[in-house]
Amino acid sequence: MSQVSPVPASAAGVAVPSIPVLRLLPWLLFAGLLSLLVIFFVSADQGAVSIPAGTAIHEWVHDGRHLLAFPCH
Image (cartoon, rainbow, N blue to C red; front, side, top):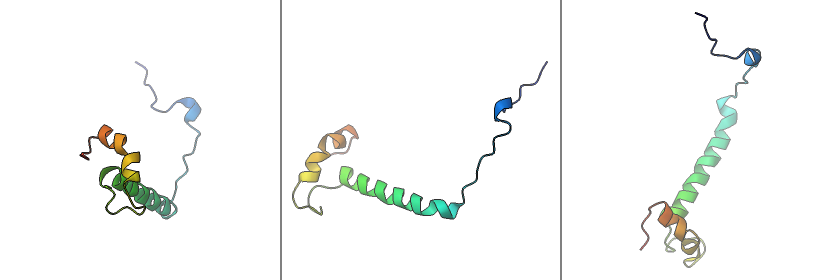
């Protein structure tokens, strides 16, 4: 019986670069804050604490809110 190598012969010489965590940290924080902002606008914003006054953001994300099963009525 022949053994099958888990790494293809063509990929054996490919070096995977390592990325230091300190270089990724600002991007991870930015993505996390952006995600929290999106979740706030989709799930919790009813116009009471919006930066723009009124219910404009609520109306813009209304269908997405129902699609994601967030109650709004």
